[in-house]
Image (cartoon, rainbow, N blue to C red):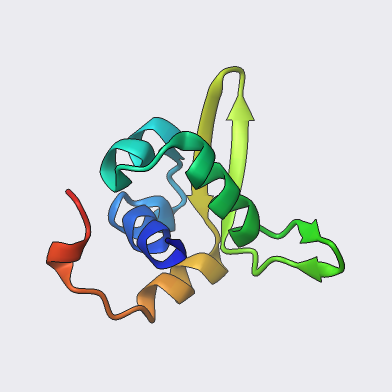
Length: 90
């Protein structure tokens, strides 16, 4: 799931600093918002227990809107993933 999220965010332009809305990710990946938020929590920089996350994404809430951005580390990680183009839903 992390690889699919990274690739989708990169395809949506989040690697250029543009945020992607959570509902758009839900639609593209055909997963529930809670599933994606749990995965995004692991991909961010927050500490869970004694372990800090890799810092690949930033999740922000603006009122009722949730948006996700790739960090520079996330864009670099996405660029290293070999993924068939037809495996990511468009």
